[in-house]
Structure formats: C-alpha cells, structure tokens
Amino acid sequence: METENTVQELTALARAEITIEIGGVAVRVHSTNGSFLEMLERRYAGFVSFGKRARFEFDIELAEPSGGNADAELRVTWDSGLWRVERGDFAAELNPLTRRGRIRQSPNPYSIDAVFRILHTLLLAREGGFLLHAASAIRNGKAFVFAGVSGAGKTTIASFAPADATLLTDEISYVRKDGDGYTAFGTPFTGELGKLGENVCAPISGLYLLEKGPQNRIAPVAAGEASRAFLANVLFFAEDQELVRAVFRSACEFVDQVPVHRLTFVPDSRVWEMLT
Amino acid sequence: MSCKLYVTRSASVAARKLGDEMLIMSGRDSTLFTLDEVATILWEAADGWRPLDEIVDEKICGEFEVERGEALQDAIALVEGLAEHGILLLSNEPPGEPNSQGQIER
Image (tube, rainbow over all chains, first blue to last red; front, side, top):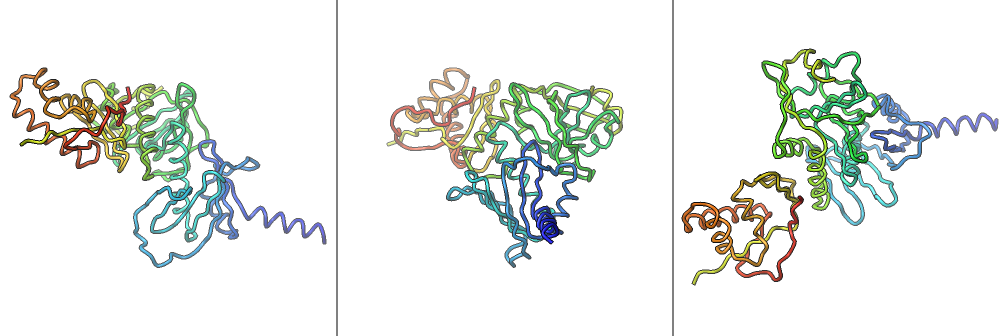
C-alpha cells in the first residue's frame, strides 16, 4: 500500500507542474488542473524541460473571465516591486526578486503564451536581447533572421526553407546577446505556418529586412534605416522608461554589430540560394 | 518685452546620432523620432541654459544661408512640436547649470 501511495503522490506531482524552456530560460508552471498542464505539454512540445532548475515559477489560477472588459488592451507595468501584466483575458504578476509569480486566466493556451512572450521581453531587455517580429532559421551553422511586418514574407520565406535549414520560428525570433555577437534561439511562437520552431540556437550571421519583389536581391542598408527598421520590429510592451531606453541602446548596438540587409525576393525557394 | 525660450533635452528619452540624423526614442510611450540635420543641431544644443535665439544665431544662421526671422520661427515650431511629445522641455528661464539630460548615445 505504501508503494501505491508513493506512485499516486508522484503521479500527482508529475501533473502539478510543467517546465517550459525558451531561449535557455526555464520557467516552471504550477497548476492543480492536470488537463491544462497536458494541454501545455502538447502546445510547447519540444520546449518542455525535465530536471532543469527553473529560473522563474508561476502558479496558475484557472478561472472563467471575470466579466470585465474582455477586449482590454495589454498593459505591462511596474508597481510596488511587482511586474503586473494585464489584458482582457488574463492578469499576471511577477516578483523579480523571489522569481515567483501567478497567472489568472481561463484554461486556454493563448493567455499563457502572451505571458511567456512578455516575460522574455522583460528579461532580454536587461541583457541586451530582444524578441523580434522576424522569422529565423539555421543553415550551415549560422542563423539568418528575416524581419518584417505582417505580409512582408516571414511565413513565405520560412515555408521555402530547404531541407538542410532548421526553422527557428516563422513569426517571433528570440535574440540573445552572446559576448561580442548575438545568438538566435528557436521559439514555440508561431505565425501562419503554425509550426513550432526547433529548440536549438546558432550565432546570427545577418538580419534581413524582407520585401517581396520581382527579383531576388540583397542590398546593404544604411545605419539609420537599419536602426529604424529594427526598432519597428522589436516586441516590447512595458511602460518603463528605463527599460525602453535600454532596448533602444541595445537595438543600436545590435545594428552596429550585425550586418543588416534589405532582402527583396520572389516568393519561391530560389531565394535560399543566396543564403548560405 | 519678448521672453527668452530655453530648451532642454528630456531625461526620459534615449537618442543616438547616425550620420547627420538623430534617432530619439521616447521612454514614455516608445515612440521613435528621426530628426533631420538642422533639427539634430538644435537638439544637440538644447542644454537648457542657452536661449533658443542664440542657438539659432550661432548654430543655424552661422552655418546655413537662411534668414534669421524665418530660422527662428521654424526653430520655435520644431521645439514646440518636440515638446508636445515630451522629448524636449521648454521654459522661459534657464533651469540651472548645464546638464547631461537626454544623454546622446555615440
């Protein structure tokens, strides 16, 4: 009987939490709802981590929407030692000192996805990195990052990636400062392709500003234009002057160090012949 | 009697000069501004203790072929526009010692 109890306890423990590692940062999520955790396990397949020490932990409180404004826009604020993240479909808070937080949301995969994105933008802002509106892929050991607004061709170029390329994401790229260079990590944040990136990383060889056109062409971009385009694609939500300034400085540093090109391309696989 | 207008770079922005232009990001709402060459000159000179008309005389009229009245009028319109976005501060008296607010990243 004692063995049976232990098994039950372990099963309950196994269902009580899940650790999701994105960009090398493990975040543990606790919930008493096993089916919600199973849903997360499917949603973040490839990014679920086992046995790794979590850098942050969140308790999930599942609840139906409170009847407030479901369409309320996202707000990320710093208040009394806590990051508070609120949107119509969820409310979350994080104490960066204790590295613990909680999320109140309904049992859906989209709310916690937003919390993860915001958490990583806050972390990366202090470390010279970013989440970018960009597709990215690894080829020949180098990461290529393709930035652009909706319709610029992120999903298109990702969908034509050759077999020897590893897709990191077709929508939101994870960029971390790494010594004198930058590294791109795979993310589970998907766009129209609906395919999770591979959970791997590689040094970034270049940033390409996407533009569909009549022929394939790569052209250099002047520093001012590169900085503006880069900043326009950085995801950052916090109402925090210090962090906004930090992101701006980091963006300028990135553009100083990483070659930025304008990539005009015909939407077919031949564009990848220029990216080796 | 005409009042002097003093202009000071806001401490809540980050700025970086790239060539002849200046990129400025508002820390308040993350809005990005790009200043052209003349606006960049005014921005760099906006240390809070030199009045705008003196800046225009020295930095604009001294460097560009432009009529003083017109240059001053354009400069006032520019700084008032930037002040509306909170990236410049305007006052009718100098705030004190020259400061390093709105430090420019180089």
